[in-house]
Amino acid sequence: MKHKVTSLSEYRARQDAHEHRVRGAVHIDVPKGLSARLLDIPNEGVPVCRSRRRGVWGAGLALIIMSLVMFTTDSVKPIQFESDNYIPLAMNHISNQGDFLDDINERVTLEQVNMKLAPFGSKFEHLPGQIYYVNHCNFGDETVFQMIVGTTQGERVSVYLVPKKSQGQKTFDEDSVSGVQTPYETQSLVVISDDMAISSDISQQMKAAMKWDVI
Image (cartoon, rainbow, N blue to C red; front, side, top):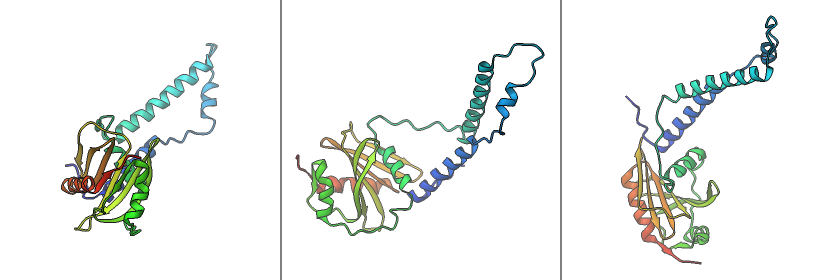
C-alpha cells in the first residue's frame, strides 16, 4: 500500500530521498585504466577498430545506467501537466527551499507587499491574513511573486503570482499536497497548501483582496 504524506515538509523529505536513491544508482565507479585495458586485449590477428569499441563500451555503460534509473524509480509513470499549469513549478520551488520558510516571520506590512507586487501591475487593498514572507523568485526565466500567508488555523500557505495567463482553473490534489491555479487578469494565481479546501479558500481571498492596477 502506497504511503500518503501528511504535509509539505514530508513531501519535500520524500523528494530529497528519491533524488538521493537515483543519484546513488547511477553513480558507478569505473576502475582506473579499465577502458584502456579493454582496448588493448589481444585479438589474435583480428583487426581492431578502436573507435567502434569505445562506442560499444559507452553504449553498454549507458544501458546499465538507464536500467538502474528505471528500476529505482519504481516504474511510476510521471504525471502529465498542461504547458500553462504552473502548479508543478510552485511545488518544485517549495521543495527546493527546504525548511527555510517553515519558521520564518518577517511580519510583512501591506506597504511591503504592494512594493513587491508593483512590477506585476497589482496591489492589495488589505492584507488577506498574516504575511510571514514576501519576495520575488524565479520559475525558469520568469520572475514570480511569492508570499507565505497564515490562516486562522495557523497553517502556512504558499502563494505565487505568475506573469502568464492560463486557460481556466487548474488543480492538483495528491499525497496531501493541494494546489489551485486561477487566471487573474493577464496572470495566474497559484496557491499551495496541505489541504484543497484551504488552497481554494486562500485563492478566493487573494482575488478579493487584490486590485488590478495596470502600470
